[in-house]
Amino acid sequence: MKKGSVKPKSHCKCGDKFKKYQEKRKEWYQCPTCDRVPDRFIVIAIFALGRKHGRLTSDPRHPSKKPEERILDTYSKAIDLLSDIYAAWKGEDFNPNDWIADKVVEKQIKNLYEDYEKELDESLKAGDKVSETVIGIKRRFRLFILPKFGNRSIDDFEADSKNRAKEIYSELNKWKLELLQQYSHSYVKNTINDFKAFLSSHLWGSTPKFPKVKKILKNEKQVLDMERERLIAAELQECYKLPIEIMLSGESLRNGEIRALKIHDVIPYHYISVTKSSSRNQRKSGGRVTKRLPAHLWDRLLNHCKGKQPDDYIFTTPTGQQLYDSALYKAWKRAWKKANRKKPIKYIDLRMATRHSNATDIISDAMEEAFRKAGKALGDNPQTVKQNYYVNTPESTPGVHQREND
Image (cartoon, rainbow, N blue to C red; front, side, top):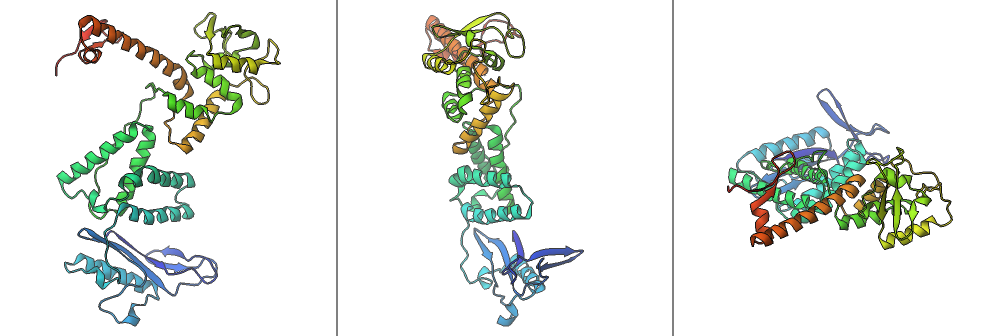
């Protein structure tokens, strides 16, 4: 038997819930308001029998007792009955229909989740879990776990042999890889851990081994694709939308350079002049540089600059002050949170989303062109060239080298 418990059948007459108390080896239920004790209890016992699972609840039948003796009017009677059920379950001739009137049915993941959801709500009320944790668990079950495994039998996840354990692990690992293609490592890790905790507490047989999700190194570069970029940008606050869209436009302007722009830096015919950063007198890489804006951003920038003096900052806070250091980063994160509520999106820092994404696109385009030219010179398909050759990093021996055969 996986688990069993004894609970009061109803609330106290005063309307309050009975609370469980423990003192040394003694346990009892009592109303915290009027000190009344329950006059009826129920036994809840969840068990497994082959591929069938059942749940004994309310006042179960007892095959060896008279009807009047089966009424659970004291906590000790209910505990004794639970012990009798457990002892019978350990025997070879255990028949669950001797204890419950309903037929024993096969349990599916979605059926067990209904009980699990109630347990989460109870732990929330008891203060064992915070609301953000419970909401997150329910959301991941609703979005990922139940659509994938909800209609599966609980027996499908019993690792009762080495071969079966390998099959389960392979299936879960394939699911993990599918999730990692769309969502962040931390989000996938939490989803898998939620499913693992659920099965550990509700599985009748041995719990399967779950694949691990490795953490991304902090110095690993992350790239934002166009679809996710549009979803986040749509949620930006109006005063921060234009400067962030300029950063995302491919001109690779830094945060400090955007914040330091003034009206006199706007040059006719789609150009802006960047001479300094807000945190220093000149740009990080030094010198003056001009950036050409796309037509749709240029028109919006001209409308934004109307009515301002030459020495006024182009981009300011809603109160008219110069943007502080982290204003754009925080605005980006707020927009990501809003977009993430509608559709889970992997979070990428604004700096990664702008400069590193632009650099990655440029390098990828250059590499594609290089492989195309090499394929044309060798008379091979560009994909074949990619498979057979690679470019060494600057730390190693320069040049193009042929890959060794495995």
